[in-house]
Length: 341
Image (tube, rainbow, N blue to C red; front, side, top):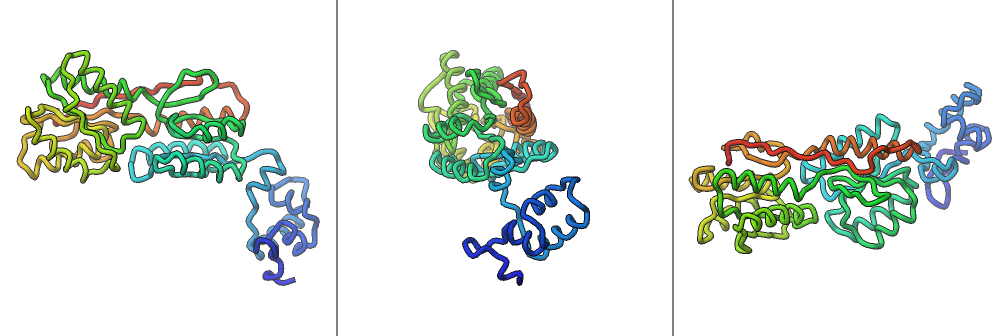
């Protein structure tokens, strides 16, 4: 039998049965040999591996999970990879899972509930051992899918004390409130809030800023600059120019993400606007490059890597049936004061 005829007529893929026929052994021997079971004769193992390599056989993870009732795959869903925030989180989670013997099935939702549901349904075909999902804002259909799967699930970047819910993150609301208080302590009274993307975590930051200014008697709807476009350095520069033209003038701008704030600082340099003399600028997340801006950016540092690692560690325990002491872990934030305020 040639390599070409060895392929399944139905799918075009080389099957375990094809390898068994090429090695002149039973399919169960192939399965045990490729799993590395010690009971299989070394000569048979060599023969099976040679046949598998010659035919280009790749094991079907879904079939293997079904047969063994176990899986080494973890579904990991993040909103985007163009933001370093989620890259940091993903790399830390993937590293921790890999060290524990698990592989990640990465999905990018683009903040789209329907896309998240479609991705999750696709990942379910691989019978994942666990799931890491970002936040709590999703469609009812996706919530039902997660619940019905009975697959351990840990939520990232936000926290919840709800019974049976596992989460690792921080209070976006309180992080924003703390930065707003910092700007008030710096003597600012007209503090604009500039936001893009308008995803749930951004809206939580908006609420923290809004509540703090309301408590100080300084809130005005005219200070809210909300743009649903994707967050970017370019957009930050445009928003800075728009806000700077506001009357009465603002004395501080709190951007919901560092890339917007970085764009604002670059625009200020081009326009000759003194920061922090004319206007103070603050950001959120402490992304790469914020400490290198002119002036360096004051921001809310969020522990993305630590969140990814801690959530993965929690999930590994759940997948192994081990006890998890804390269902909700709040890793907090840090106000990093630099030259822009």
